[in-house]
Image 1 (cartoon, helix red, strand yellow):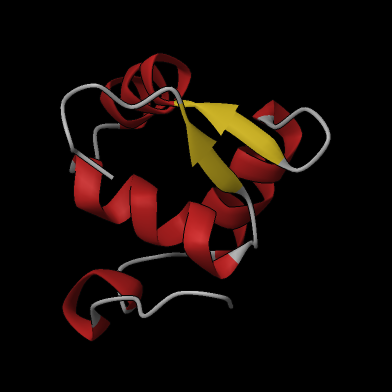
Image 2 (cartoon, one colour):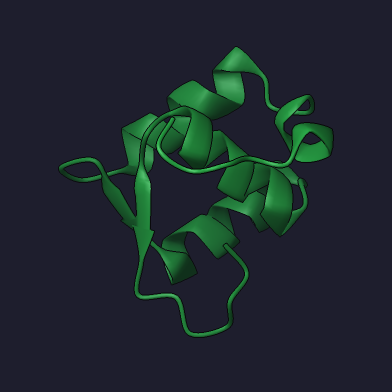
Length: 68
């Protein structure tokens, strides 16, 4: 894990959520809009989806809103 992940969000990340983020990533990266949509589809907070990406070592790019 390359950046500090808030423990209160990290504890909500399941292995299935992490695996799903990895599956959405391309070359270890995912765009902000894709991760936001993923969070909405999974019914999790943006911060939890971001924590899943952090824990899976997936970089979030193209983020205009500062959600992740």
